[in-house]
Amino acid sequence: MTIKESLFWAKEQLKESCQRPLFEAELLLAFHLQKERIYLHLHENEEVEAFEMFGSLIARRAKHEPYEYIVKKASFYDMTLFVEKGVLIPRPETELLVEYAAKIIQEKKITRMAEIGVGSGAISIALARKFPKLQIIATDICDIPLKVALRNIEHFGVQKQITLLKSNLMDEIKEEIELIVSNPPYIAEDFVLESNVADYEPKEALFGGKIGDEILKQIMIEAKNRNIGYLVCEIGYDQKKSLQLFADEIGVKCIDFYQDLARFDRGFIAQFNKEKNE
Ligand SMILES: C[S@@+](CC[C@H](N)C(=O)[O-])C[C@H]1O[C@@H](n2cnc3c(N)ncnc32)[C@H](O)[C@@H]1O
View 1: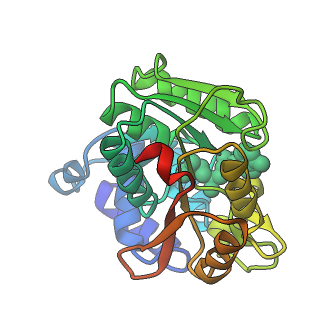
View 2 (view 1 turned 180 degrees about the vertical axis):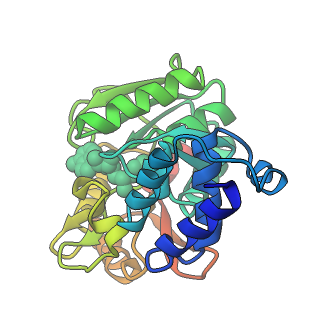
């Protein structure tokens, strides 16, 4: 089949599973041929080599497997990260978390921070690249994220700044920390997710408990008990009220919530010990 015919065929296969079937067909064919997308338009009548292999990529996508797992790459911030099944695909809204954390690091001259739930390493690597003097201890409870994060950390050459630890929350961190950043699992266990997420992404990265905000609350308690200055977290769109109440209950000094570009509540910045850090 030629490139033009292959794209027409692939578009038909992806009609039910993708919002932009032709675009995704082009991305996957470009990946298969190891060329830029523009190449497809300039060589429409060229034969596609190893068409069966392209066919199997299309079949995976037609079964809702995320594009990022098929090509083993995800864009985040100014980086292309390696990803594989078993690690959460970093989301664009998490770039906001990096921005809010960066503001605090800059304003408060933070030099030691922790990330809980490192996943692919997206947040820690973005912050390490922005602040070359920043030291980060990043934990995860699962092995695949730790392996993938290490690969990305080495790829971006920030291994002197980021230490990975297998740990539940911060249990294994003994050092003094000034800031915690986390995009923890925060989805309620009975929430029905789309099949590209539910069938492929790791449950440990998604579900935060029966209500969903349980791990977020544990992290708040941890920050409070350890007298850590600042905590920046991503949250679910419907969790602001319960987290505000909880923050008041445990005596958080100050908590500000932020919204994403679609105006959904998406995260908070909490301050625990004003006197020490001001
Ligand atoms: C929503 S993902 C975030 C991954 C990455 N930070 C990002 O933003 O793309 C949450 C991560 O937390 C990890 N995790 C879940 N429970 C944890 C716990 N109790 N302690 C440490 N990490 C945990 C999961 O394995 C997963 O990698």
